[in-house]
Image (tube, rainbow, N blue to C red):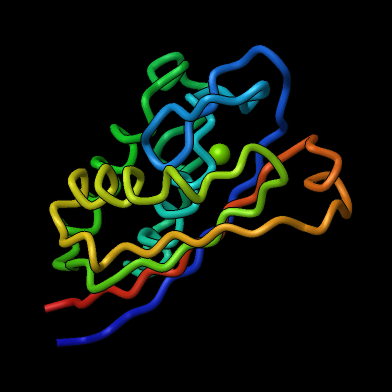
Length: 159
Ligand code: MG
């Protein structure tokens, strides 16, 4: 068995009046992500970390934002397809550790539900998914509430 690691990051612009999807759930917020899909930055970062760990390409390669097939798509579908791609390469998830960087809203109360949702899509134990949250102390585009960043590191095993 080989252990492999992958890293993924994603950014999205925030605008008022859009639904805010993060970690596979809708979170009450004044602003949501501008995106071709549902704009779930956390799931997109997780997808890229898994693809990277498996030695595959990136989320834009498999699910291009120029394709009408992926317009407004639920990112959980992309996560499921990504999981299928790494399974085809003989890879299984060990654990995924994530950080969401966002000024508002506070996502801490929603983390258990996000973990439950992601673990369910990936058919893994909740203890294998970790989500942490931080702000940038009002600095930069995240501090000005103009955008969100998400980072994920995935450890997978290949048989
Ligand atoms: Mg994205």
